[in-house]
Amino acid sequence: MAKKTRNRERATQRPKKGKYTNIANFFYQEQVAPLEKAYRQHMQSKQYELAEQAFAQSRIKRDEYRQILYRREKKQVP
Image (cartoon, rainbow, N blue to C red; front, side, top):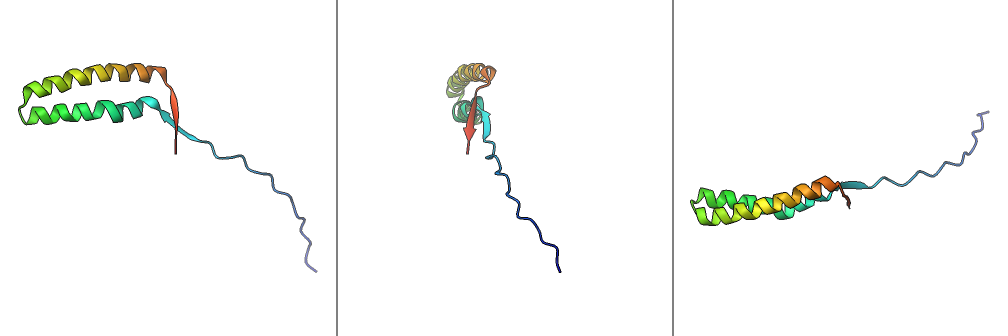
């Protein structure tokens, strides 16, 4: 005869840990990167006045980015 096995109650697993990322990454992606891309495009096409404006705006946004990065706030991502 075969040995009888016990029916064990399995412990419930804890839910998966959520994934988080820094809010500064989202800010950089949405605010800083487009301005830097515009600056590079204007420089390549020799539109120096527009490039200067884009560079000034990107400097302001980069300073904001550094402040947000220093705060180290997190945001849950799907």
